[in-house]
Length: 91
Length: 393
View 1 (cartoon, rainbow over the protein chains, first blue to last red):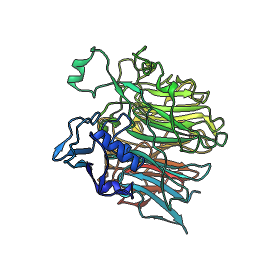
View 2: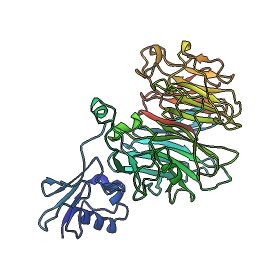
View 3: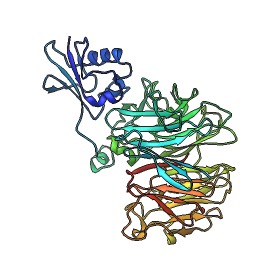
View 4: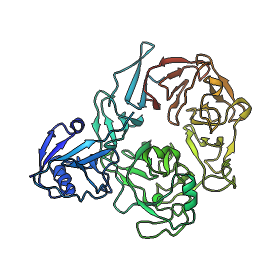
């Protein structure tokens, strides 16, 4: 079961979320969907309603940023962690 | 007299209370998060804040206890299949693309730019103007929101793009205000509900113009007659206008005011036609906000800026312009406002009037209040975050 490391910034909106969550999923999209079952509403913080990854959010599988920001079809091998992070931006 | 101000800022929501004649800000709510607009629903007293969170997406917050606590309201989302005709950010490359086949983009909410509360004849009804140009309405006080399809599918936007290809020419241009979101899309920033009949609504779109419904959103028609475009070859085109803010006089709803990219306009007949009432010699022409008097149809206030190209305070000083004769003439007031080294810009939602009180906030975090109808001003604070909206609450 993939381990999902979530930025602590999401805890502000979802106090029950842990910094490391374990959810089923063979692709990043499935992982986000599984997270949304556990924490209803969290998916819309990560992707928009067209299912594109939000512009200032980054997702990594292992050390590599995902390639498919449109549909998050990137595979998640069982031995790799997923990281959902706030991209560097702001002011 | 109002005893509370509600500010949307780049770093959160601020409430400023008047107690014993003294205005005092509370600790900031939603600290660190940009808020595009905040207002009080006059029907039930709830406060609303439109979160403009760059990372996690736009969202609505609601307070049922005068701002002591805030809760998530349901999120506004565009329905599956909602599309718009893609427009490129103006550039030499984009000009080369002119004439190429049109392309479409799936719509996702970028920003809630304005809220419009219906009257007591429609309890629970609130409208939200958004980027990329959709108007959403809730019938149940914000639990669920739906996209107004007749406006989204209007022939001026290419027709029903859910059904397939565009069937008409898109007349809605993008707004530069959208470019921060990486797109060049239209935005609805003014939602004006007729206090006599909540089914009669005006929305103002950058860049398209003012559009009106008289049947609760089932049909929409442009109402831009008399408007002038200084930046298009055809100055009197039906579409392509850039209203910066539109409002009306609650006691005389036939009187509308519009601060437009091309000057100040007013209408005495419910937007049947508009007349430009700028006074360029006095510098009363370009700007973003405009506020109408509650009772007097002929009185309005604006905070002018130096030209559309520069968008700065005029002569490095700040002044407020007021008309009391329907825009025939303007008086300018500077007492209490900085007149040197001043670079404040006042955004479209950052000026409000209530009775004798007028208040505005600036992008440089200054907040000014007048309690004598704009003639003299006092500063309520110089160190606020950049202020996006100011509303008496």
